Length: 211
Image (cartoon, rainbow, N blue to C red):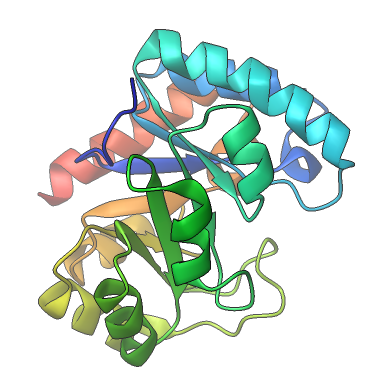
């Protein structure tokens, strides 16, 4: 059974380069302890066989937890591990071709950096869009920050769920929420935390206070 893209506050992403030496599977296990509802597997420097093995293990964990599981970029791995969906960027396979491969029963998310890209993704049938990076970030070194203007435009105009991403942490989160973010994609602020569930509780307390 596949889970539709959830209404939620935090969208977690993996990054083994920033995980304090912990395995990606262990990091996901800690995220699930905090009742995270959507997790994206995003690993840039691993062999395909390793990624598939990790994704199959994560799929089992997320399925048991009722968590939506998204694989970044790799449509083949998403299909092989029976993920709930795939996320692609502007330089990855075109949305229409991804949809042909993955079908209508799985989620497709698209990274966008300006409103014209968001319009195209929404028109093309994306289930949600990524909005960012809002701030400079070590995980998106090739894409310049888009700042708040695009976030505010996407928050006002988008007809699908948006995930605001890029340099979001406990310091930047209040302003991002004030500018219209509903769901925030957070990477290193969580993966670098010694106690991941405690960090997620801290971030959620900030969200509750802001709202």
